[in-house]
Image (cartoon, rainbow, N blue to C red; front, side, top):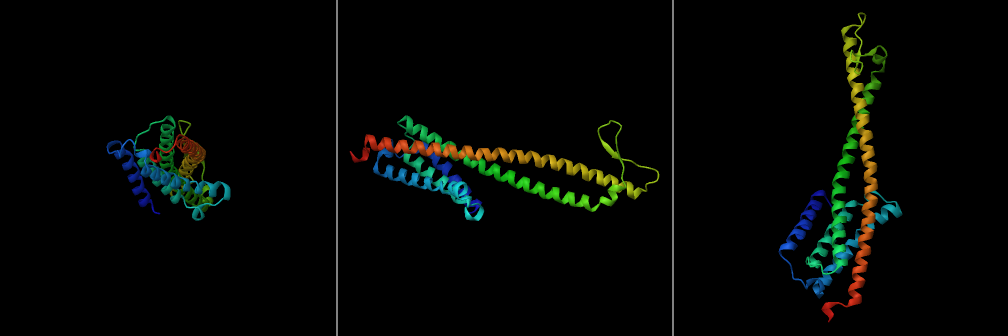
Length: 235
């Protein structure tokens, strides 16, 4: 599944979420036969989204062996059906908690997907650029040995010494090397910052999983409560 298909699913999800407040099937739809079928279908599809973290955490499968796109698709289609099932008529506290938890899990997954992918791409690009700069610096080691640097008048910015013995070509190369060293230093700092951000998002992923487990716990309680008090459509 491509990113374009995922974006379409996102539009459908938010469309169902917004339109549900305007066009409701009816306050009794959630307890009807059709409502229960839609709700069970949504729950089943959401359950399929747990296959991805199970394969990743337990079986250690990643990448093509465990595609993330299916997890995202199940995590959008299932909640969309649950929204239709609820008909935005939340008559009990457990139903309200389940609905809100589902929204939090979905929204956290959406935000995490886009931000985490952007961070990974930026970090990969910066690491590649850093490697290129270090390769250039390594190629010019011989020139670097002939350069002498000193602090500027302010004492904070180093500059290449322009000795009377050094020719203009050598001075220009030393200045280029100084700029190259600046660029490497800045990129190393940026890469370190993005590495820390990536580490924080790994913690976010765990929170996302815990929220999902909490959601399915509420769904289980919601189903048991309905079974205990009786299905209204069967009365």
